[in-house]
Length: 304
Image (tube, rainbow, N blue to C red; front, top):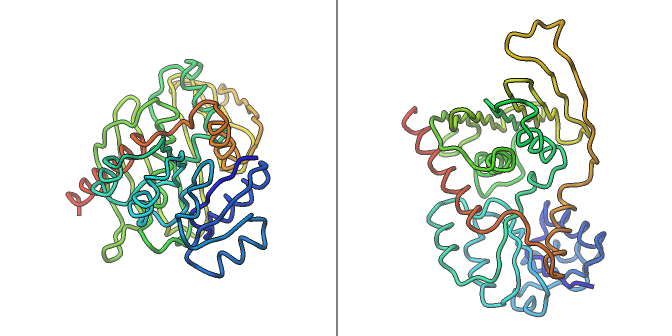
């Protein structure tokens, strides 16, 4: 049985704890909040502590603290010598991300959960196989009302997902071209961003929508594939070119196994600790996502 040290047991940390236990790991939780530690004990944690040094005996470490604390937390655990899995984003500034990159860290990976979503992986297969023809456009929509995360704004909470979806589907994050942001004081609550060209990427994120939306559209010269929501178990494909009449287009629905992407990425980390392949997102990818986000923020300021 692997022994995992989990730093942070807030809203998402609790989900991580539950899935680690389901996957057969024993977990020691480190959290400064006594109520969070008590909750962890009541829900299956082997031990709890408020001192990160207690995690030196663990086989691997998962960081699920607020993103603004990641630099300090990773600095504290860098010398433990145990592989690390860090929740996204790596940091909320490029300066912090680069400082993390300069640390002498053991193998460190990012928890970019949408790269483990079976529907996203199916879209990636469609993009790479050529079935859709030439991929022209990727469009993602990620919206809801407010956010439980108060340490940073909506862009850093939502947009890292969409950049890593682009990476999974296209093999790279295209260069930013333009962005417009909805600012409330100093906080960005929404952004529409344009990246690349053939294929182009359009990212639309906001915490000002009454309804929650999670849609991914992949447009090719031969058809359009759509993952309508994070909870569905299929991708809709409409076959036809830009000249195909509506009554001549053909619809296909391809199903996939709807396994929890969080559980899949945690299983990948546990497999790595047992000597298997590394998780898909390394530290360099985490730094690149932060760099692109800062570039989009700068572009949006030009349009303000």
